[in-house]
Image (cartoon, rainbow, N blue to C red; front, side, top):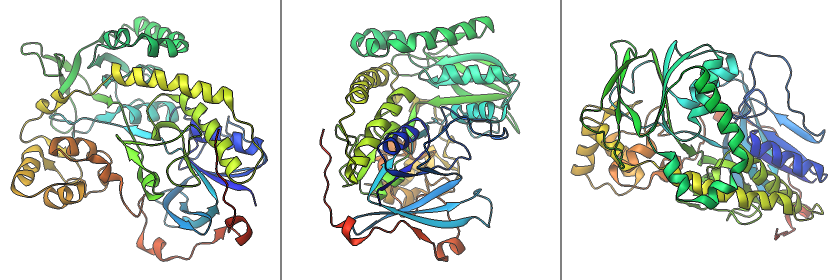
Length: 457
C-alpha cells in the first residue's frame, strides 16, 4: 500500500498532503486541531464546516496528539491519542507508513521580564488564537510587544475582536535590517501589500507603532494593571530615563518562534542551530522522513506551503509513485529562504534582554525558578547540558516541560537548548493510556519494506 503520514495540518502539512494525494498516494494527515489550517489559517472552532477541502485519498485525523514515533522494519510507526486532551475517553491509534512528512510548526517565544507571570500576560500567538478562533479579545486595553512582523496581524486580530490596542512595541529597527539585505527584501516583495494593509489598519485605529521599544515590566496585584515600556539601545539594553508607564489590562508578547522539535528528534533527524537539516527535496538525515515549514526555518506561510509541496512529492516518490521534480515549488522555496534569511537578520533577539531581569524574576513559570536560583544552581554544580541543568535547577521539569522557558533558560545558563525537546514521550499522556493496546493501521508488508527508494532531484 502506498501511504504516507503527514503530521501537522497547517500550510506546510496541507500542501504536502495535497501534493502526495495528487500523485495517487494515500495520506493520513494528523493534527492536534479540530479543523485544518494551523495557526495561520486558524478557523472558528465553534463554526460548522471546514473551509479547506482535501482530496478523497487524504484521511484527516483531527484532535490527535502524536506522542511517539518509533522505527519499524522498512518504515515508521506513529502513536497518537485521538480526542480532546482533557477527555479521559480519548482513544489510541497507531499508523505505520514508509514515509513521514513532519510539519509540526513552531510556537511563540516569550522572553521573561518582571511581572510576565501575572494573569493577563499572553503570548502573541495565544492572543491571536483566541481572537481568530473564538472571537475573544484577551483584554480591553492591550499592548502588543516583541519583535517581528507577526506583531502586526496579532494587533489586527485583537482590533477585530474589539480590543483597544494601545501600542505596538517593536524591539528592533526593522527598516535598518531590511536595508542591509536588499536581496532578501526583494525576495519578499509580494508581502508589501500585506504590510500596507496592516499599516492602514493601525493608522485608522490610531495605534502607535514604536521601534526600539519593549515591555520591560508588568505591574499588578492579582492581574496586569499596567506596564513599563522603555526605549532600547542596539543591544536591547533599556535606555535610562526613557521609561513610560501605560495602563493596560492585557499584554501580548512574542519574540519570534521556536520550532517544535520533539517528533523530529524522536525520528532521529539531525538538528543544527535549532532547526531540522533538510536537503533540496526536504529530506532529513533520517531515511523516509521529510520536514517542511517552521521546523526547517522561520519564513512564513508561503514558504511553508512551498516546502510542503516539495516534501509531499518527495515522500510520494519514496513510496514508489512516479514523480516529476516540482521545479516551480522548489524555486519558490529558494526565493522564500532568501526572504527568511533577511527576516532573521532584520528581527534578531539581542542578548540585552537578560538585563531586563531582576534576581527575583521568575524564568521558569511552571516550577517558579527565579533568575537568582538558576544562576546559583549553575555556579554551584557542574552543568554542561540540559539534563543536568534541569536536575540541579528544576527549570523545565514542570507541566510545559521546557517548551516555554527552555530556550531562555538555556541561553541564561550557556547550554544548548535543543535538549529540552529530547523526550521519549512527545506530548502528555496518561499512564492508563500508555498501558492500553493500540490498533495498528497500515502495517508495512515484507515486500514493501524490502524496497530501498531514494529521492533525488
